[in-house]
Length: 53
Image 1 (cartoon, rainbow, N blue to C red):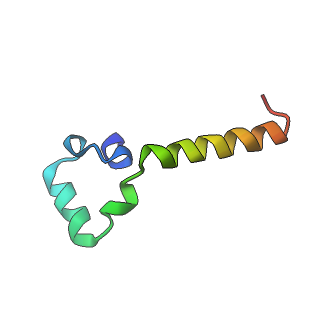
Image 2 (cartoon, rainbow, N blue to C red; image 1 turned 120 degrees about the vertical axis):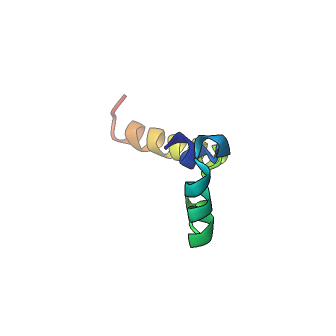
């Protein structure tokens, strides 16, 4: 799972990687650090607005 989320290619076995590439969905699993950061800031801001520490 971590290989899919971070595009750490050694974490994905070769048959799965080939399948994802053939289906054209490999880019869906590639989440860069900036996207994770944006998501974290968004969730943090939402929780602060709702007064949840």
